[in-house]
Amino acid sequence: MKKLLAIAAVSFGIFANPALTPAALAEAQAYKFDPTHTELLFSYRHLGMSRAYAQFKKIDGVVNMDKSAPEKSSVDVTIDVNSIDTGVTVFDEHLRSKDFFNAAKFPKATFKSTKVTKTGAKTYKVAGNLTIKGKTKPVTLDMEFIVEQEHPLAKFNPAKKGVYVAAFSAKTSIKRSDFGMGQYAPATSDKVDIIIETEMFRQ
Image 1: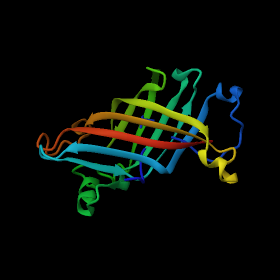
Image 2: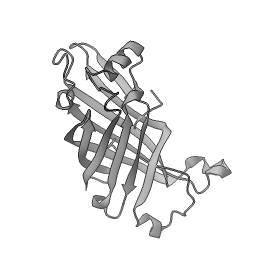
Image 3: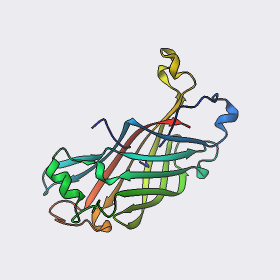
Image 4: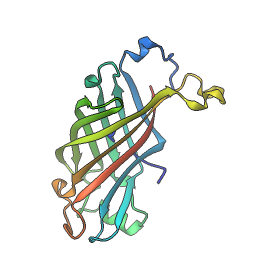
């Protein structure tokens, strides 16, 4: 599972060198996903029995984080639908078919934030529009900000000096039927839980 995406959550970038000064922290910082430390998982109840988990292995996007004015922050994420991975090849192919994601026609899913609200010392509500299979619905991520810092390996690896990272966790729930993928519901749950764990690089 440790391959994925990744939220709200929550999406960052390429190695940069600016110092993490108070002045810099007062400005919005752009981050992109670290693809090797990002997971985007989803889960659902199978036929009223076990809980199944799957993931998307390829996501991209940017989080613009303004710590001094969180309401000015934004999240823009793109998911490669063809990267779906359930661990069962035949099932992956079925999910990519017209019955579900119709990946040939709609190869990308997107989330674009419309509002960010600070709810606690390190927690946020990120409202936005989720588009899957050409259908757009409002979704709210519960996001937790974990840390923003110079890369922890900078103490041991000179190449990590001046590399700044951030980490987030996020979760939400959707109804797959809202996106034209309601087959076999309610035998297999309509509700799908989404979990995002990500480390990001500051641009």
